[in-house]
Image (cartoon, rainbow, N blue to C red; front, side):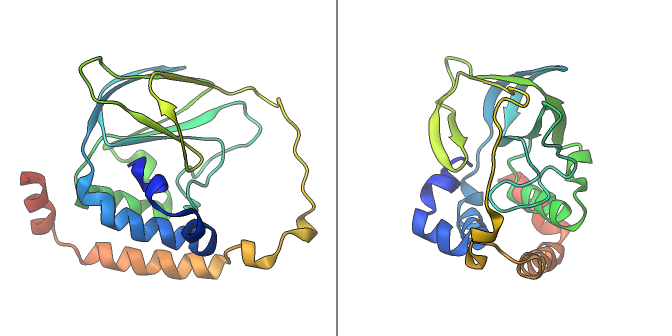
Length: 197
């Protein structure tokens, strides 16, 4: 799924933001395949197949505001989300849960934890695992991430940030509601049929 941010042109990301990712994501979903990976974090390890993982400091990834519903900027921890399923309809269902309630992190197809360090690797027999860093190619696994708690202070003159650079809550709400309605129209038969493929 890292291809999503590489294949959305920068101009499209800048102009459409959230919508650009939704459009390209819908196109790429059928191509998702699970990858064998080894993730070592503070409270354990995951050694198995997953379609993607997210490591974030905030609640937002790619314009999606609820990926990490309980993110704290000052706790010295990353939020790690491992999505074990590669089934298109199950991923859509998880996205709908995320948009509706932020409870996707409680789903059995997801592993959710907080960690100050993450080590990512893949077996030698496994094809490469490209790492996406804030929408750009960041190299291949193996890779280690470490949260340097309160390491940098940041300042911004919010009065000079143009309104056009900010999506309104109403825009995101409207888009989210439309997506949820489409996913809810899917029936169990379609989901079961996709599992057979």
